[in-house]
Amino acid sequence: GESCSHTHILAASNMSRTEAILRLLLALCILPCNTSISSAASTADAFLHCLAAAIPPDLLHTPPSPSYSPLLLSSVRNLRFVTPGTPRPLAIVAAGEASHAQAAVRCGRLHGVSVRVRSGGHDYEGLSYLSLDPREPFALLDLAALRAVRVDPARAEAWVGSGATLGELYYAVAAASRALAFPAGVCPTVGVGGHLSGGGFGTLMRRYGLAADHVLDAVLVDASGRLLNRTTMGEDLFWAIRGGGGESFGVVLSWKLRLVRVPALVTVFTIRRSRKQSATHLIAKWQEIAPALPPDLYLRVYVRNQDAQFQSLFLGRCDRLVSLMRAHFSDLGMVRADCEEITWIQSTVYFAFHSSSKPLELLLDRGTKPDSYVKAKSDYVQVPIPWHVWESTWTWLAKQEAGILILDPYGGRMGRVAPSATPFPHRKGNLYNLQYYSSWSENGTDAFDKHMAWVRGLYKQMEPYVSKNPRTGYVNYRDLDLGRNELGDNVTSYAKAKVWGEKYFKGNFERLAAVKAMVDPDDFFRNEQSIPPLPAAKGWNSI
Ligand code: FDA
Image (cartoon, rainbow, N blue to C red):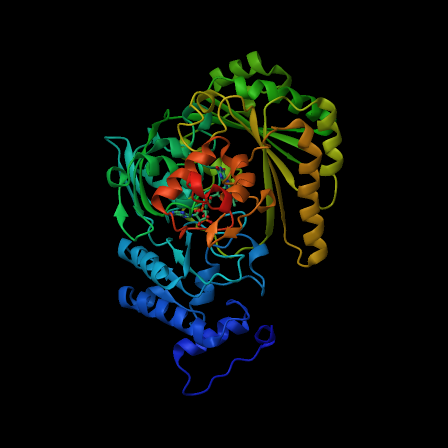
């Protein structure tokens, strides 16, 4: 529309602050281009007034203020979502306490502005800080400041704010006791809020399962703006927030976690084998061996260029590890010299920064500006992929625009939890999670198209060899190629959502939708892949 081409912003001296904001939003196409100033004004104006009554001005940021852009970018990890056309929020609420999050929900509800919740900002499709629906004015509720970690080493429990990063959590746990740990993901800048909402797995999963398996309680703001805990939210909602994906059910402010025991020293190694050194054969064998190893032994593979890197964490000492590797996987040729015996907390640094001698304080670095474009997809492998397929994969990996493959072994504890115990269904029967990950820093559409085509092309090629009916994926490796929501009657369509929903959640999707219908029937908390309310049996046809 006309207003989209406006690039100048009138700064009439008598223009109200709200009107100035609205003009700016229209000029940037943040509001629908056909929105009339007066109707948008009443929505945005009323919304901002409502927020201002409950939230101190220094925590409320609107586009004209110089703090708005730096705050918006503060935890964006992906340059794909930092373009002039990326929709931006009406306002950012930098919550400093629970009442600010409650106000954001209440005001949004009252004035028809939706709320995107952001903890660590690592969502692969940017859904924590953007909306792809141009009709939908939205605000960003940023939880980064709610990041306190309180560890009770005697009880082996901790309370952690959603805005903490995994690195901050690990650091605090180790500072309280070197005998304790928390089983979660490998990247220390990932936010606790999104990670626990989608499951969360890393080097301890074969011994202890998912991060979400260790949640004992949570504090949540529901769609009416109420503050609930496990007792007041009830077991259905408490089930849904431990793996059902972020955003759909409410804003989780903090989590009570059960910590796990680790020995004083663990052992790590990384062994690199090139294609010429029989990497194909080793990967093919790894598929059967790694998921069946004792649960104390985690051995993943990173495939990049023409190399496979075998990276391991063992909850024990070198001697025993060498004999286990000799017994189970002698072809890898692991020897004593490969071992590094370190503390568990050093192992988190080792996996994140590829060296165990770097300072632990690196775990506290929340990261700065986004510096690359990222696209990822994921699969579950249930039957070993044939040798010849791996052999042909090297051609993909030799391309100039090639990304990497990450093979994360399941089995152990992962296979012993019932698929319906939490919304995360990928338990028994899955050998490993296969992630296709591409990141690049060249600007421009050529680079963009090539890298996106690489990820999508290899994913397509693998189709015959991975899980089927449905072809499953991990919700925390969010992928909008799997499908996205459509609205019917201002509520997300269940039938349309089922297409992507059953890939992430299999048989748990319907139960998630039933919980959604119970706790947020008006579908306030939504995004492009949020859980839709399950239609009442009667309403089926109209959805
Ligand atoms: P972000 O803030 O972007 O939120 C993700 C989603 O959850 C959004 O929809 C958001 O609205 C919602 N949400 C966030 N906070 C919420 C809250 N408090 N209440 C309700 N909803 C909330 N995963 C893994 O299992 N193991 C791993 O090793 C890794 N490694 C890894 C590395 C890198 C570099 C990236 C980018 C990602 C991973 N991941 C991962 C995936 C990661 O677990 C996933 O992206 C998480 O959702 C990120 O959580 P954040 O809080 O950072 O995301």
